[in-house]
Length: 450
Image 1 (tube, rainbow, N blue to C red):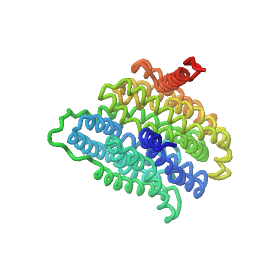
Image 2 (cartoon, helix red, strand yellow; image 1 turned 45 degrees about the vertical axis):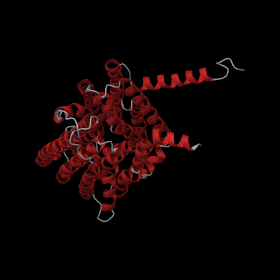
Image 3 (cartoon, rainbow, N blue to C red; image 1 turned 180 degrees about the vertical axis):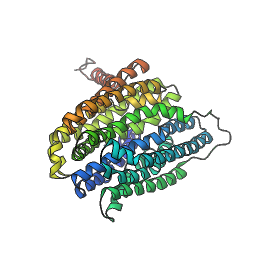
């Protein structure tokens, strides 16, 4: 390949490939974490861990209310016109706001530990785990704010390090040095998140540009208001991850929650590729929208979806064909989650085909429409978990989750088409068709040259 071709490819796709390569580190880190939990804990204790972990994840989300995502949008918006002062101000406001909310949620989580474990789940032995899990809320949210700020600076690779694999890597190192049980696993998570917060803030300090004296000034946007709208999408994702294990904790034996949790983690391998692309293009969407570049938005959405499909197709095929063998890597008892995994794959395929659509709506001022859509998705998830989980166990939880994913995918596509005039899958199809027609027109036969 010619040097100029290599340079062009590096300019067009180099950043994306670096971001995805960074996410690939997630495999040995995050999945090393889940593998260690599955191999070193009994199945029932695995279920107990994931019930608590899921509840704390939702509590953490409520403690930041999408402010980290709003910060990404705000910093990308103000830096597009060169206002570094406004970017710094937004960052400090986000840290103060999320810190206060997270502290409040931690106190609430500590107070609710006993009634939640004893009165709702009817599993009193989970009380101590809920108390330990509450300690993860503050460091989780502080690291998320640092990662959101890095994304707003267009340091997407650094942002993904903090968001995704840094704290699981620290978890793996920690649990190799301490006795393994569910409580120690939660403590190791808290330690990993503290480490990710410190390192993320260091990255942020080094990456923040210097302010220019004569730069234009931009009026600040309300981070909480924007974040609350954007949080609706994140909240549904948090519920999709956590609500099924909680429902299984209420309606089924704890072991069912363990089977579902591991099947879900396998499906998240595919989501890892999808989310890496979404995180990469979110600040670009915000910038293009601020510059009123509608054609650029359409091109960026098509390119991002094509990249996501290219990355995800092989993992989807591998998981579909080798579901049982992959589950057995976590232990032979997890082969029983085969049907659960296959049901979840249906929903993940729908998510993959609509990659970046929710981010596109959130970053272009249609967060309220996204909120209404996610309210409907929330209803589908709650009804599905309530109806299917008591009778079908882990398979019922998977059916509720896949139904929610399909609902969200179809709804987001319809909203994007109505509000923006296009949706990513349609834009990708139009782009590929345009290239095909251009290639046909340029061929010797089409031009009349024989």
